[in-house]
Image (cartoon, rainbow, N blue to C red):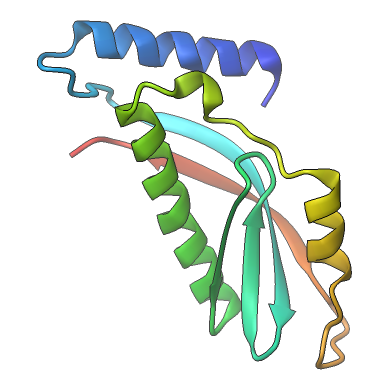
Length: 125
């Protein structure tokens, strides 16, 4: 997401919050295009969102992705409810990314990690 797109998103969130009653977030939906990495690790899979520095894990690749979606939703909802829209995007540091990617893989695999785009849409209940 470019800086301009992020600013537009923050502006939309602010306008939504101003028009809502009792501080509720009143948005039809919020779409974020995020980059995530999944890798096998000690009998499970770890997943990391690069733009938000949110991580999760699961017994399978699919479970780790589903768990990451849940973690992203929890993080985004919390940040919006706290009025911290400007702090929503916090990219993974290069040091943390290097550690995530180069940590020893215990079981040899032809594909040590995979990167994929993740579309997250938040529609308040």
